[in-house]
Image (cartoon, rainbow, N blue to C red):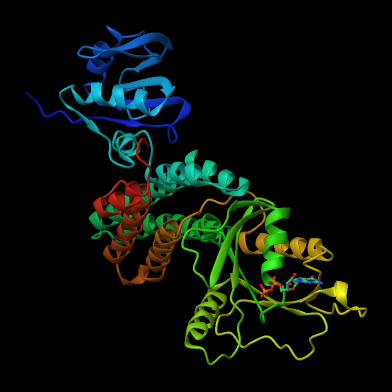
Amino acid sequence: MPFQPPTIYALASGRPPSAIAIVRVSGPRAAAALEMLCGGLPRARLATLTTLTAPDTGPIDQAVALWFPAPHSATGEDVAEFQLHGGRAVIAALFAALETIEGLRPAEPGEFTRRAFENGKLDLTEAEGLDDLIHADTDRQRRQALHQLRGLLGHRAQSWRQQIIEAMALVEAGIDFSDEGDVSAELMAPALARVDALKCEIQETLAASARSERLREGLQVAIAGPPNAGKSTLLNRLVRREAAIVSPHAGTTRDVIEVHLDLDGYPVTLIDTAGLRETPDPVEQEGVRRARARAEAADLVLWLCEADDAASTPPELAGDAPLWVVRNKIDLTMTSVAGEGTFAISAATGEGVDALVTALVGFARETFGGGEASLVSRARHRALLTETAEALARAGQRAGEGDEIVAEELRIAIYALGRLLGRVDVEEILDSIFREFCIGK
Ligand code: GDP
């Protein structure tokens, strides 16, 4: 019997109990699963109401069954899908029945998407976009991920790769005719012109995407300042005012509290650090050390101090993050203190907080680039596109050293784009990317 890949199954919908649960089965035995549970194959791609029945234990649930014969399915394999009631016992009974079918086993994280990738349904950048879409918290993250899932970077990379292959064909033809110097030069000139244009296009794409891969992680804003300046009060006010995504963040320590905010679609993590100050207490010193480390790693530091505290000066931080001075408790003072690059607020009453939020949104827009979702959304993409552009640049610079050198640089560029698309020996990359997925995806 020829080798058959295992047929995999998993819950594709969220954590039970839920109104409806979706269980997917993919692989050569998907039809066997449907026949056993529904008493026959439903019509392809048509929702069919049926009573799922296990041969040993009897009826499981009334459910909708779907049958997607290969290759017209999400994974490119035969796929069965069950939409049943989302109770834990219902799902457990279906899993128990599936387990009895030979050749079936539970799916590993990302295994459905990996099969889709291996069957050419998605390239690697699209698979990454799918993962980002599932994990998108804010609207801008969603739009960027969708961009990627629709294959915009993948299609562009595919076309660049094709054009470099064509340029390489010209260079190699020149090598074959190297006895006849004129032919070689005639072929080389258009190849180099094309390579130079491609290099510019890739560099422009990288520049336009500025730091947009950071959109996946979000902007880190540290709130620092002396004890009692009102850091927690400000944090609480911002959380109440904006849609806080998660609060507090897992991994919160006693010293550092994080909340994730959605500021006009930009993901922003606010970090409330313990008071930064000199202290003899060793436990507190450790807190101050961590607070300082977080503040130094942040993209922006809000230095909060009391409005009439003229003595409070921001600390010298090692990082290159800008520092905004925010004078708090203006409700207690009569003097207007806001100056250049300084904010004056009352965390208690909310006065001045709108202006601070508007400035934060502006800062986020500047950091991420405010325009349309960009093509480059991961450090992996940026690294490989940079490698491609550099190889193309070297091909141009070293043209005088011989056709073989140019061909070699073009080969490096083609290889880098192949890795971007996941079409060349990238087993470890694939493992690390698909492991990040959820089970059932
Ligand atoms: P933290 O140590 O910097 O986190 O400071 P807290 O947020 O715990 O605030 C210290 C004290 O100042 C609390 O009693 C707050 O109620 C008070 N506080 C914070 N912001 C304001 C403000 O804008 N106006 C007034 N009047 N009191 C404030």
